[in-house]
Image 1 (cartoon, rainbow, N blue to C red):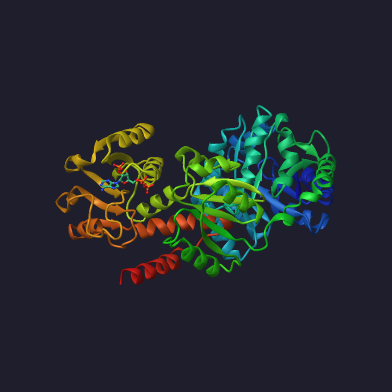
Image 2: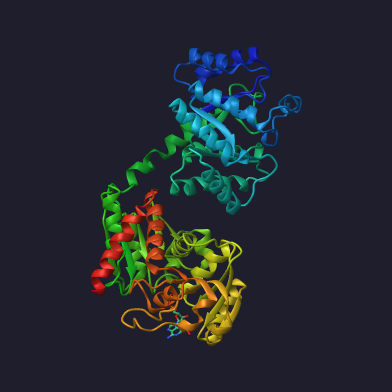
Length: 522
Ligand code: ATR
């Protein structure tokens, strides 16, 4: 969609500009923060008369996020507009049945909830755009992702992210958000303001932006860098004619299949869990386990067979990285990949091990500000330390082999103790990532039962057996416990989210895996 912003200074001028713009655009944005004395019902009615199909966005931009050259006086007019007054205006827009209302992420979750309630009450089809602008610069891609998630968290139907481009390269950071947003299944409007940001305005639509902004005539821009509708349409025509042969629909597999790459894989419960998820979600596809001898060939197979993606397990979590086209920031920081997403032949590596662990811990306790004693120094310990630190936890690492433990602790900047010193350690939570207690050595525990009262919560990443000796001892001592089953299911749910953009039925998956483990144990 091409959207023309209406930034007229009076209600009469706005009515005139709506009459001119609505027929030329797919959408118009009523900038109520700049239309002095703007009569919303009258403006909305005028748009409907001028073009019955034109979509209407109602916005009342915070002055801190606006960059109109002539905005100074308008900002003064806007000064009296407090959040409740702004919300009343947006609620009025909802009642008028406009297509979108735009509210800044900075207005907070409560404001968005109030709008959502209003939409429900009115049984309105209005969608909420949660927006974020930086009128000065473009932050890093990592920061943009954080902003995206903050918008998602407050309850956006659509997210709009528009920073100011100081350099051409800033466009690339913003445009990279489209691939990212797709994974989270949230429609996105993103581009850069400023003359250096023009290319993002042109390319945004081709990459999946819900809309881009343009002006009817040059000189009428609501933000620097906006092109005219005519120029924008011409660019799109040229782009479309060039890319026609590569339309994404032609390459997306009709039936997404997934594979587990590991060696060995015979005992894995991932096929059971993922096939249950695909079936419950009504996705026609299959997940199978492959015992891999030649990793490079296996990765080529994912592309060649147009599979939706893969899980990666021992011993390939690090080795697989060199065969991928791209890596998610967390996977790169962790140095391990357990998930591959195939986006039209482009393979990106992710890691959901740390997500699974963090999610399982969060179900029982807060992480920020709490202390965690992590046992082990292998790949699972690395995921645990990374996730806990990312969430603001303080980690002590303990390991049998000193050099391995010291190396890992050094990499993540946490304290290290030999496992033999466990009797000196007190923490809010103990997490076992070693293989001690794994089937068939069910009666072994990495920590003597007499020390478990040093911890409030005890977690074990082992899920076979379901109740390890460590967890049984911890429960007997009155500790809260977290089983490896939860972590396993959450990491799998994270994979499904990445592959399908949809939430997995976590409770169903937990029961499915639990049932199978009970059968195996009996
Ligand atoms: P993963 O990738 O699942 O973390 P890993 O890399 O093999 O598996 O790491 C297993 C961890 O369990 C290691 O930290 C290992 O300790 P060492 O570094 O001393 O080898 C730990 N581990 C295995 N058996 C153990 C035992 N009997 N006692 C204490 N730690 C043990």
